[in-house]
Amino acid sequence: MRKQVDFLVIGSGIAGLTFALKMAKYGKVCIVTKARMDDTATSWAQGGIAAVMYTPDSFEKHIQDTLIAGDGVCDEHIVRLTITESTARIKELIKWGTKFDKTTTGKFDLAKEGGHSEYRVMHHKDSTGREIENTLLDQVKKHPKIEILENHFTIDIITQHHLGIEVNRRTPVITCFGAYVFNPRTHLVDTILSKITLVATGGAGNVYNNTTNPLISTGDGIAMVYRAKGTIENMEFVQFHPTSLYHPEEKPAFLISEALRGFGGILKTRDGKEFMHKYDPRLSLAPRDIVTRAIDSELKLSGDDYVGLDCRHLNKNDLINHFPNIYAKCLSVGIDISKDLIPVVPAAHYTCGGIKVDEYGRSSIQHLYASGECSSTGLHGANRLASNSLLEALVFSHRASVNAIKEVENISWCNEIPDWDAEGMVLNEEMILITQSMKELQSIMSSYVGIVRSNLRLQRAFDRLELLYRETEDLYNKSILTPRLCELRNLINIGYLIIKAAQNRHESRGLHYSLDYPKVLPK
Image (cartoon, rainbow, N blue to C red; front, side, top):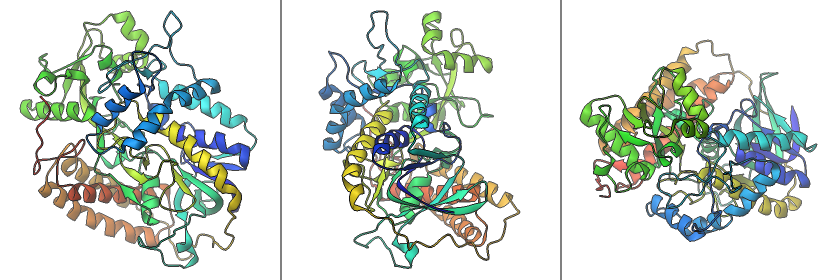
């Protein structure tokens, strides 16, 4: 099947839905999502969205907190424009129908998280992302010019490469004409031509064994743009959330929100001793990279599998009211957080690097934009400040829409694009070839390219990944395509990008910590 749309949006989280709503006034929009429309990383976001709402907070304080967390790698211009536009974007969310918690006086009940100097995190109990996702989906479903294709897997974006024109990383102008998309009903690959395409496919946490990301987070958008010779940057900076619930049988790992530490929770060893004073004066509310390495260090010293988060001293009713989902989840596995230490362990959580974009969300490929976790805007630098991610998606999807509105009138569809050629492909009947390779990939990345790295570990990871890459490409080139095979291929691309970026950074900075270039943690 072939179709033409003005705007193709790949992904149905906060970044994709916001862009779609803004562009629907100017043409036909098609949203392609690989699972259900509400199965997104946005839906899983617990803590909230950071924005300056009241004094004594200020834009400058939020800017400085972001720059400090980013450890010298942030683009200050991008940080400033993102933070100064934050309040307007939050008000727009509220106008669409998002409900944030308020105090009895009617003011927003702002939370404080690690790295923030003020209370500025807007939230809806401990399910902020779900509230935002549902609100945006309600608006999208009502719009007559927006079509949503659920359970459709985008295989690759289309460029002049598919017209037989050689494209490499030195090609001065690469142009996006749409995407090839796997149709689950026909098991064929459709051609969707678009004037403008937005990649909003989220992160890549499933390149690791233990992640808080949903199973859909397989780095698809980043890998697609990399294969299309687009610019990717800062992939070495993978944020591990310090506190996921230690429950090895469960994937993905359940997130214990940083807001719980902002509420007064204290990190302790299994035997009840505080330890964060040894690593940072901000204690349990230090930035995530510092807390994660501290926990990793304590686990190596003790030999334990997890540390504890102590909330037993907090008011039980307040605890349950503010964190009902966390309370219920822990109770379901036999933990009463008002009486027991919560067993926690770091887990891969957020991809700070990705598709390099400018201040209007434009990638290095013409007519291709990116927003959300798959993008690298310059906001996060070497370490994302808590609750800045939903904000980034809002701001850059808005800015992308402002630019796209100007551009779309001057763009035509490229009707010479050929349909997907599957001639000669055979059905792979041995799923073990995919599942075992996925396990090997995740084991390699978790063992050698995790919280603490070294030159030796990175080289070992690279050598082992190379074999997986060759085997998977051979399978891909002769098989009828399936989403599982494409996800494996994408994650191998992601692993390669993380390893090479880490090898090229000859220092420890932010989320990239190397034993060969040690950096003393702040005292």
